[in-house]
Length: 226
Image (tube, rainbow, N blue to C red):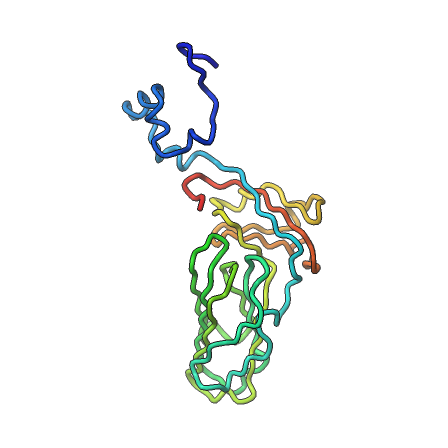
């Protein structure tokens, strides 16, 4: 529309730049009166974006490391044989833990937004299979400390899961509004979005097959965009 000979009402990328609101004559008046605050826009403006995951690997229990020896001198820094192909959760499985009664396991890595994240598990969490909450684009280190026990003949596998990490944050799981798998619509019942760690489990509708392609379309508030 035209107001006082000036075209108004269009939102371009420049409109979201620092100071753009108050630099406009109408925006300046609104800011001065307090009718509009930049912080209000940051929380209410939604950015539509998408993440593309091409030719990904099937989830596998020992993709990162197979049969790490838990009897080595503690603390044990795991050998990382392979990094995740895309940002995704990391899985752990004790092949045996007969000679370990207390431990701590710490994984450090970088998520889909380039942030360093750390997760730790101990015997208080049990000896069952474990999957990280964060989806990691790369693993920096995995350190196992054997607090009690020799670890003789005990080993552990490290693999990759089915939860893919998003490059922007979700305000709510409902922010994910469309997923395609191999160019076909993947209905909402087939995936599970999670807003605390900003992941999408694409295995709800069936296990990932090697070389599957996924496109995730979602909304993120301007204030949460990385």
